[in-house]
Length: 100
Image (cartoon, rainbow, N blue to C red):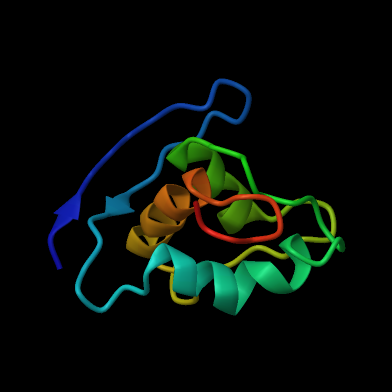
């Protein structure tokens, strides 16, 4: 897998990360959402992600570190490429979890 190193700094967290380019084996953003996110984020258990357009760095941070009741997910569970696909998918998500 081809890797692109992207170093970024989140001023409030002082982090850096390695980002993988999506490979053919990566799930689509929609599949990641349905497999992992929808159970909570489209049922009212957690904030609805519809209409949100979070930057990739925010998605990466939240998924890798978790927040409140949301667990953290390792790269072996959701790859960086899949998170990139998820970020793209979320920008087209309408309320109720339907794609635009």
